[in-house]
Length: 457
Image (cartoon, rainbow, N blue to C red; front, side, top):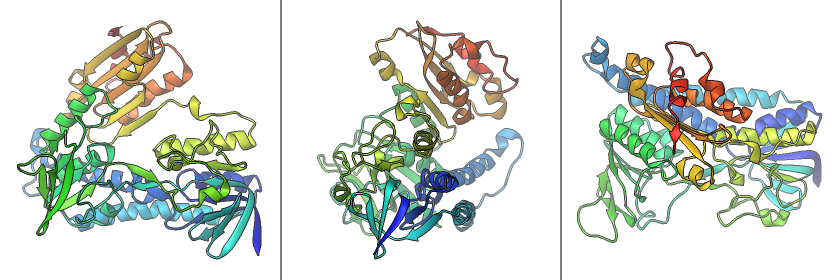
C-alpha cells in the first residue's frame, strides 16, 4: 500500500531539519527519512566534533607555551579518553537538541531506513512505499577512498572513524594535504603524535594562493608536522604493525612510515544507493546531483540540497540551500545559488578566513586590480596575544572599488573575514570599511589600515 505525503525529505544534514521546520510551519504533511544518525556530517563527524577536538588541542598547545606568558606547568599529560568523552558530550548535546526539535514538529514524521527511489517522486524505505508531490534530497557525502595501490590491504582511518579514536597514535600518517587533513595534522601533533602529511600535488591546498599555502605549511612545520608534497604515484604497504606510503614510480626510502594512517583526500556524494535513475534525476560524472540555480533537479518536483548537489561542500552552503528553496517555495523571493559569495575557513591555528576570489580568479576576471597585504606582526592585538603568525590580504576592483576577495590568515581570522564579506554583499566600495571607526585594540581595526595600502596588482 502506498502512503501519500505532501513532501518527502531524504537525509537529515544541515539543510533538512530547517526545511522540515518550515514545512511544518506551512502545514505541509512531511516524512523525513534518515538511515543513520541525525545531523549528518556536521553534527556527527564534521564541524562540531572536530572543532571540539581542535579546542582541546589548542588548550594543550597553550599550556606548553606557558613560559612565554609568565607561568609554567611542570608536566602535561594527555588523556585521550577524556578528550574523546568531552567531544562526545558536545556532539550528544547537538544531536539530542536536533532530535527534540524534529520530535516537536506536528506535521513531520521521522522514518528510519535506507531510502531508494522506485519511480518519480516515489520512495521505498523499510518495506514501505511513500509518494509525494515534492521530494527534497539532502544526503550529504562521505570520505573518498582513493584508488591507490595497496589501499585494500592496509588498515586506515577516515574523518568518520577518527571520531572513535580514544588513544594517541604514535605516528599518524595523513594522505591528503587539504582542509580536513591539515586540521587533523595540527590537532594530533599538539596532542603528542608524530605526524606526517603526504600530498600528491606540488603544494598544500591547491585552490589557495601560493603565499597562503606556503605560510600554512610553515605554521605546521614550526610545530613539527612533517610535510611531503609532489607524491604523484603513491602506494600503500603494510610492514608488520606499521604502514608506509611509498613512491610506486621510484625506489628508495618511503615517503612516510607510521603506526596509523588517515585518508583525507576528498569527499564523494551519498547518491550511489538512491536509484536516482528511476526518478529521472540526472547526476554528473562524479555522482553529484545536477541542480539549477534554485536547487531544482532534472526531475519535476525534486530538489537536491547540501553536499550531494556539488554546489558547495560546507555546512553554511547547505543551510543556504535551504534558505534558497524556502524563499522560492513560500516567500515569492527568488533567491539563487549564484547570488552567494564563496566563503569558508580552514580551522588550523591560527585560522584562515577566505571570501570571494583568489588571485588567479581575480586576474582571469579581466578587471583592473588593486591589492594590499600586511603581516599579522603589524597588528597590536596579535602581538599582545603572542599570535603573530600569518598575514592579511585583500583584492579590489580598481574601477568599482568593490572588494573582490580576501585571505586572512591569523588570529581570529575566521571571524574577522566577515567584516569584509558583509561589505562585499552590500556591494559597497572598500572605502566604506576603510573609513569606519573600529574598536581598539582589536585585530579588525587593522583592516582599514590594510585597505589604505592598496596598490595596482
